[in-house]
Each structure stands twice: as structure tokens, then as C-alpha cells.
Amino acid sequence: MRPAADPPTGPASHTEAVLPAAPRGLRALASRAVLTGGITELALVGAHVLMYPLGTRVEPVRPDPSRRPGGRNPAARALFAADPLAARTPVVLVHGLIDNCSIFAVMRRSLRRRGFAHVCSWNYSPLLDDVARGAADLGAHLERVCEQTGHERVHVVGHSLGGLIARYHVQRQGGDARVASLVTLGTPHRGSVLAHLLPTPLVRQLRPGSPVLEELALPAPGVRTPITAVYSDLDQVVLPTRAGRCDHPDLHVRNVLVRGIGHMTLPFHRQVLDEVAATLAGHRPVAVPLATTAAA
Image (cartoon, one colour):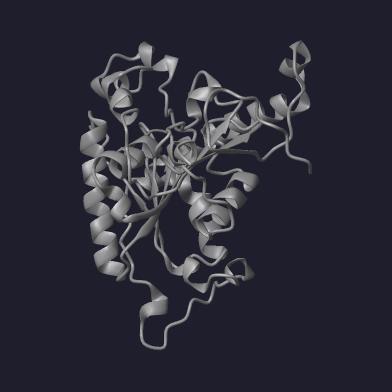
């Protein structure tokens, strides 16, 4: 399957298309890929509504079995042959707005089957009204994960708002000391025009040009955490599509465009799961900040 090129939309360090390009023009509205993606999105939304109550429970943080005396990770796979330690780094999954950890039901199982020894989800309060406060709460949770697993750093995967909360913690609260890598799925890094429809305090922070997004656009020299931003051309929540890109000259950012995948489908789609696993395992290139490239 040949990857399609991502159209230029401004400065970016690395961009990779995962799925083939859909037809352009009016025919694209009725293309098989778009129709299939739309139907899949509707089906997953319905299934997720049924699964939602299961995601309200608090998931315990379990110690890494490979760190116990004589312990081994029975799920180890050839994916980690080049770096046996990659499978041991804990992975924390952070959900989006008005959601919970049930959105990661498939991803949790997929990552564990691929050899990741410790995968857990984190539910923030449904009453959260501030990105910075949610980021601080995430930081406290990451500290607990590190303490209970014996690891100094973790991977974080954030869907939608969860990715923005994690990025804020990494970029503005010193979270890069704990976060080894961050993958965002359908995250409104530049906001979304749909945020104008709901005037709640948290949603107002997701509007393009909001104070929170302006703060994230400020210089961030020295941030070490590599960020992979997966965004879709069929995302009906993050509008316009390019708002799902993370373009910052000081960050190690790699933008990945996928095609024909809806907003809620991203954490379930096989090719997205493959991309997340390969990224966390260190099999994807680490982008160089544009500011560093320009200085050289």
C-alpha cells in the first residue's frame, strides 16, 4: 500500500500519511472510503455508548511483572527485538471530552498483546473546566504510575482533549521529565471551530486562538518529549482538518495524516493501532525541532 503525500499546511518537521488518499472533488463525497469510514464511525459511536458505563471504574496501577523476582513478560513480541526495554515502559492512555477509558478498550488489549508490559488508562473528572488543571492532575497520576511500577518515565497516548491535556503538561508544566513520548489522536492542537457551539469554560479553551492555545504557541526551548500527532481528513470534531496538526518550532513533532477515519474510530482502527505501537516501540523517526534546523 503506497502512502499518500500530505498537502503542505504550514511549517512542520515530519509528516507521514498512513492511509491512501481518497478521491478529490465531488466524487469524494460518495467514495467508498468516505462512506465506509462514516458507517464505521456511526457503528462505533453506538457501541461506545453501550461500553461507556464500563469505563467509569478506576483502573488500578499494576507493577511491571518483568520487575518481579524471576518475572517475565509472556506477551513479548518480535516488535521489540531491537530494544527489549521498549516493552517495559508504562503506557498511560488519556481519553477525550465527555468520555472515559472505555474508548481505549481495543487499544489496551492491542498494546498488551504486542508486548507492552504495563498499559493503564486514566479518567479525569467529568467536571473538569480547565486544561491546565487537568494537566496538573495528569502529572500527579504519572508520578503515581512511576512510583508503583518502578519506572522513571512513561509513554502517554491522548485522544482528542486528552492529547491537549498531555501536551500542556509536557510543554508548560515540566512533564517532559516523566513523559518519554506523547502520541495524540484527533487532538485539536489549533482548536476547533465547533468549540464555538458550546460556551462552557473548558470548551471555550478549545476555540482557535484561545488563551490556552496561545500559551501553547509560546516558545518552548528544551522540551525533550517527542510528539506524534495523528490526525484525519474525516475527523468531524476537529475542524478544519489541519487543526489536528501540532506545528511548533521548538518541539520534536511528527505529524501523521490518516484518511477516511472518523474521530471516534481513531483509537480502534487497526492501522492507527499499528502506528501507535510502532511509535512507542521506537520504530519511527524522531523529528528534529524546526528551530534547531533553522539555527544549523
